[in-house]
Length: 102
Image 1: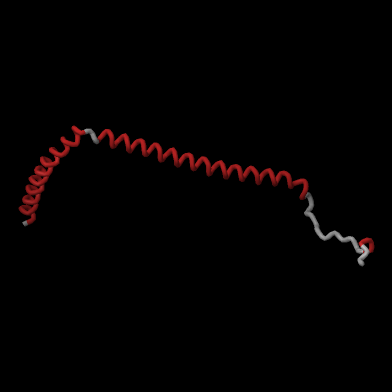
Image 2 (image 1 turned 45 degrees about the vertical axis):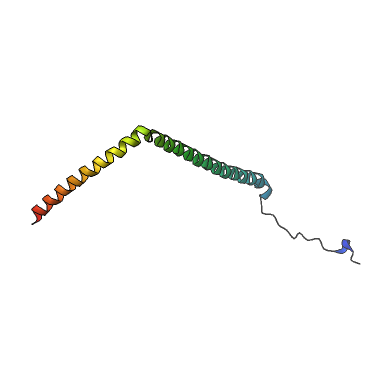
């Protein structure tokens, strides 16, 4: 059996100078950094959700403003007149371009 009293007592682990004096401050600094990271992630998430909500509200309001029944009927009747006007305009422009190019 080994007699523990006869064994040499050696310090196998060494601690750097001032380690225990600096250790509490290092722990607190690490905790502050982690809290700041969590706060930044949380704030970014809240900002993204708020932006999505605001954009959705603006789009819905814009659609509701533009889709009244009167405007839909008016737009359909104006589209046919607009199409005819565009055909006349471009026909005249193309005819003039052909005249000037030749």
